[in-house]
Every structure is written in structure tokens, then in C-alpha cells.
Image (tube, rainbow, N blue to C red; front, side, top):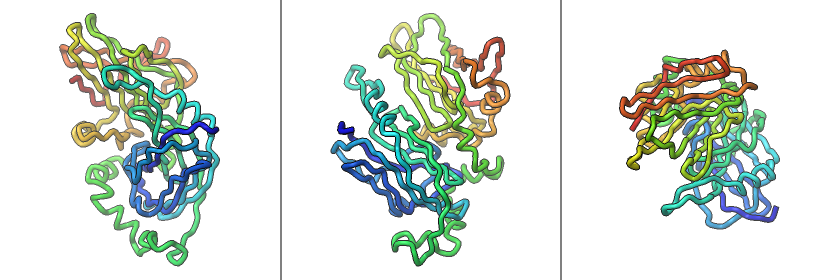
Length: 342
């Protein structure tokens, strides 16, 4: 594949399972985006951007290989692996791109960032991301390995100091009070939860607005780290397809006078989530998501092979959102979540 694109790379790890980067690379025929210990501790949240070390304006070929070695602080072990990437899948997504609003008009843009997700038990997920859209392009399994202090390169030896993992996990800088409080109240999520989050269901959101209001866009964030922004004003429609369970749904809409509104639902019982995360521009999966209502209802009451809808009935004047799952004759109200019209 000779066609080139501009892209860069970053790291993602669950908030409750921080990791230390040892080494890694996203490799194409004409470029290698490398990772080493300078990335430090990472736990920005599953699927979330862990920052960028450098940005190139040059265009590179589609990468064909991923390799990574990291230290799991919670498990106190190293994982490593090398994997071939599905270049055709990545290429097709780069070519397809997504709609974006710029300078008063809608244009098609494409992805420009690879996110390497490092989960417990050596699970690795690779996403591509551009603005509000993020797609999974690979899932891999690393194996545990042993790296002694003598074997480690100089800049990474700090990971092997006595009690290093324990001290990092006690640090408020790494494990914020919000994370610690959730782990105390709800326990540590099972290490396998990030595989369970990849389970797919045939569903779509359905937005019901009063007469005189018009939907402009729909943002869907799902617990497998994917997201999509569907711009109705640009002629796009939200289609039913296999998706993971949503952790957040947001919409934009207008009244008959053109005044713009927004509405969001976040599937968490943490009443401080909006203040501690959304208002700060953060959008990681709520720490209690694996225990909450929508997750349980999908897993216990929804057939993944039958189409279903998550219906949001918006009442702007009352600042109210009615919310439920509909599958055939089955109607399941969703009550334990955060809702806001603004």
C-alpha cells in the first residue's frame, strides 16, 4: 500500500490498572513511531488518549506491525508481544474518514492517531482516532516476561526498584482520590472486564424531539473504547449495527428559531462525574460502569442478535430526558444515570 497518510501514536490504560511503558513501536515500511520509558505511568482511562510526544507533518505508509513491552503495576509483571496489523482494514478506514464541521461547511476528514490500549492479563487493543471518531482495528494477546534490573536499559531501571509499584499505586497523582474512592466502594473491576466490554449488540439510539426541534448531531461512546459522531445536518443518519454497550450518549439539536441545545446521558451513578470529568474535557468510561444498570440490562435481558433501540425522549422546556431500551415488545426503563439538557 503505497498511499501515505499523516499519523502519530499514543498509549491508553484503564484508570484502575496503571502501567509503565518499557518499549514499543508502531511500524510501517517507511516510519517507526517508538515508545520508551519517557512515557512513564499511564492510566488515562480505557480508550483515552495518553498524550503525544511528537507530531510529524509528514505522511507515512499504513503501519504493518505493532510491538510492545510494558509493566503492569497492579499485577507487578511485564508483558510483551509482536503482532501483524490488518493493513487493509486500517487503509479502508483512513480512506472512508468521517464528517467534520470546519469554516462554515461540512468536510470529510480522516483519522490521524493510533491509540495502543494496554489492559490487564496482557490484552492489547489498537484503535485509530480522529476528532470525535474512534474505531478498533486490532485485538492482540501479549505474554508475560521477566526483565531483571540488570537486563533493563538504564532509563527503565526505576520500574524495578523495591516497592516501586506499591508506591505508584498509593500516589494521588496516579490513583486520584476519585479512583481510590470508587475502588473502595465498588472493588477492583475484574481483570477480564475489558474483553467483556467488547461484546457487541445490534442496536442504535433513537432520538425523539418535540415538534419544532431538529436533531443536528449524535455522539455515541461505547465501553469498548470506540466512538462515533453522526452529523445529521451533513446528511448522515444513525444506523443500526453491532456496537458495544454505550457509556455515554450526547446530541445536539435546534429549535425553530435556530437556537442550539445539547443533551447528554452518562451511564454512571457517580453524581460527581459531570463535575470531575465532563466539565474538565475528560470522557473516560465511568469507574462503576461494569456494575451499573445499562450494562446489566443488556447482558441479562437483551438478545445481541436481535435489533434494539435506546430511546431518548427529549423535553427541552422541562429539562427532562426519558430513557429506555426497546427490543420488540420489551421496554426496559433506564433510571440510574446522569442526564443533562443544556
